[in-house]
Amino acid sequence: MYERIVDIDDLTIELGGNPVLRGFRLTVSPGEIVAVVGENGSGKSTLLRCLAGLLPITSGRVHVFGEPPADDASFWQRVALLGDEPAWYPGLTAREHLELMTAVHAAPRLSVETALEVFALVERADAPPMNLSTGQRQRLSLAATLLRPSRLLLLDEPERGLDAGFRERLAELLATYADEGGTVIMATHDQGLATHARQVSPQGAAA
Picture (cartoon, rainbow, N blue to C red):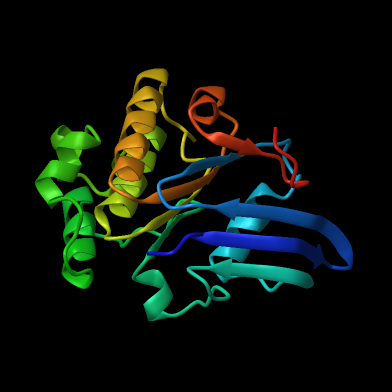
């Protein structure tokens, strides 16, 4: 067991010569839920991409599970990322997308049928994602993310497109994940989600 799932010290990231994050510090322990809050363009998504090993840092230190994040199979066995809406496979239904996730990940956290029920997709399970509403596609993305076995969730605006009722349900699901020993870091504009998490600003100070 790691004392710290995430350890960031004096992180600076520049894109095109412009500083996006500067001097950012953050430590996150197992079972914690952390909300990164701030205005659009303040670096929330940049931070998540950095934690996922998808964006190089300019200076400082970033460790995830005690090592610099790396975009490789070993890293993704422990980390699940929800970013922009994925490119859905043409011709596959919502259920088939989830079945594909269970086929490539050993020991999924949820069965396909449970995921469809939990994310209120049972009645639309046989529809292709592009025939779903924006909120339904977001729930499908969340189902695929939480179905995967993981110890760290990186969520970029997970509330996007969700109605108020399901945002409350999402808060409960994330709390359950943390109670089971998982760790959550999410960029969010939703104060309801942020209220139940430790809040940090992109500048590194507690909010």
